[in-house]
Length: 77
Image 1 (cartoon, rainbow, N blue to C red):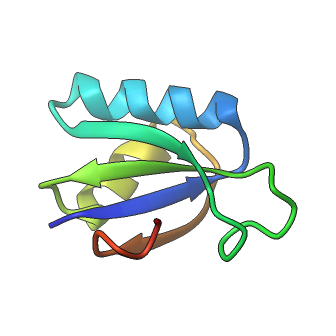
Image 2 (cartoon, one colour):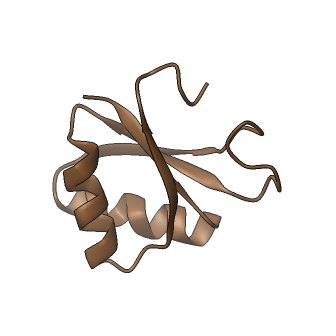
Image 3 (cartoon, rainbow, N blue to C red):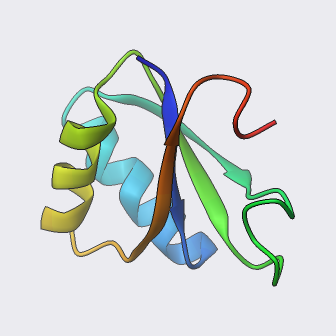
């Protein structure tokens, strides 16, 4: 499954990406599009071939502030 987790800052994005990668999750960061982030300061952690629900658990354990989530390859681009 592919999806994304939107976080409030680039700092949380890198913290989240690192936490996910330590657990073997393939993830990368993109600036969240205006459809997701009206203020333009949010970032999305794109997750490939991993459950979004499990990824959220990892991020919460790492104390990453989550703004929202979504699934599907076309949701973020």
